[in-house]
Structures are given as structure tokens and as C-alpha cells.
Length: 152
Ligand code: THU
Image 1 (cartoon, rainbow, N blue to C red):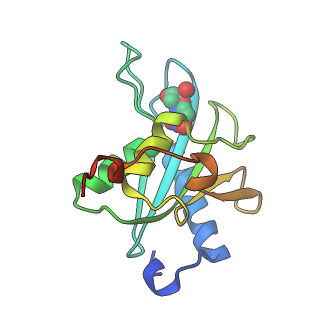
Image 2: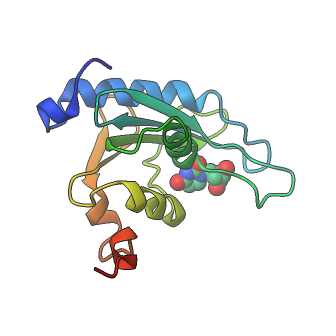
């Protein structure tokens, strides 16, 4: 994406539409033969890049990774640590997206590590026109974060 969130501060409808489109595309890559629940995420970095992720399951179940964390870990492993928003789409395999897929608690906590709760925007979408936008603070109130571990 060409739009810098630092310059613009606020998500536009076009930002949101592009992010949802990227999340829908990422969902097609979902590796979820066990749950057959497919999730895609598109993470908007502070400088306007989009990093996508899908859920990746495992025969041992425990090592499975959510789409949101895939996107965060891809970005952080490339040196990116500032984020503006994430769009998430999820629904059972074989369906188009039919439900709002809110991020699980573990993913909310991963977001808390890198994002300012009152600023970071979470978009859950059924389509490019049908979505909800909320902040991380709304989905993870009174969270525990890195600043708790600072002693001065
Ligand atoms: N899943 C996600 O990718 N994100 C969430 O926030 C909730 C759940 C995945 C994990 C698993 O592969 C499948 O959805 C069913 O739980």
C-alpha cells in the first residue's frame, strides 16, 4: 500500500478495503486440514506496507499458528515493529467469509507487545463493505505489556 499511516493517522475506507482484500487473498493460503477453519490477516505497518498471514496447522495440533501471529511474526522477523491496523477474515473451509472472526486471546496479547492499544485498529470483516473496526484497547482492556517489566 502506498499510504503512510504516520502521515495520515486515520484509516480511510480505501485503506480498509485494500486490507480486507489482502486478508481474503491470504486466507486462500490457509493450511488448516484439521479444523478446516480458514483465516487470513493483513497487517498494515506504520509506514504503509501490508504484511499478510494465514493460519498454519500441525498434526501435533499444539504447534498451530493463527493468521494474525503469522503476519506479526513475518513483519517483526523482517525488522518491522510499528503497526497501524490489521484486517482479519475467517470462516470454515469451502465457504466464502460469512462471519466476523475476532482475534483469539493469544493473538491479542501478541498485538499488545508491539502496538499502542488505544491506536491500533482491528478490522473484522465479512466483506469489503461489511466490517467492524475497533481498537486493541477495546478487545484487550487493562492488558499486561512490556512497560510492566520496566523498573524505572
Ligand atoms: N485461528 C486464527 O488463525 N486466528 C484466530 O484469531 C482464531 C483461530 C485459527 C487457528 C486454527 O488454525 C483455526 O483457526 C481454528 O481454531
